[in-house]
Image 1 (cartoon, rainbow, N blue to C red):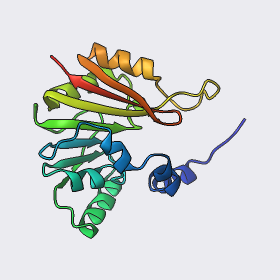
Image 2: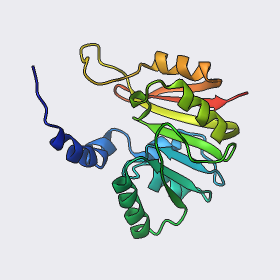
Image 3: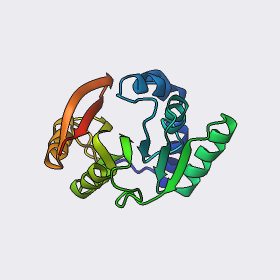
Image 4: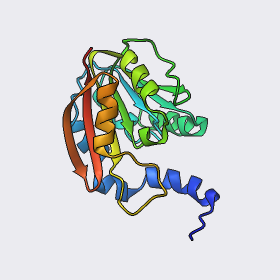
Length: 191
């Protein structure tokens, strides 16, 4: 049996979120090239963490990038980075993952990177995301395909995620594996 200390994990989280290895695997720029992001779009970075996607996205669009995280310390990091890089269209949002503090039909694109697997049950959140999205808006979901052997991390397979999205009234328009074991679903709010 392996016993991992949790203290290490928290610090490890920030360094992993910022790690060059992660950028090598898939840079935020490469990923943003793969999604239907338009210049005047507004975007919600759901579970924004240290702004890995929020900052590069904000440089590409004129609309607002809402960086939502439940951890105020993460939002502070994003604010500092935005200042440093002179990005002015980031709106840090401290919010719980279960209740989106945004107006209905106000967002063009929601980016949810490596966060949806932590939310149980997922259906109510997907429903809220659909409400927050404009008609024809997109939900971009990045997740790791579960490894057959590892029973410890709560992962959700691409198939499972697609099923959840369909049940919530999304249509998956694109599926890809941008990096090994990382899958991306692009879904549109259709109804």
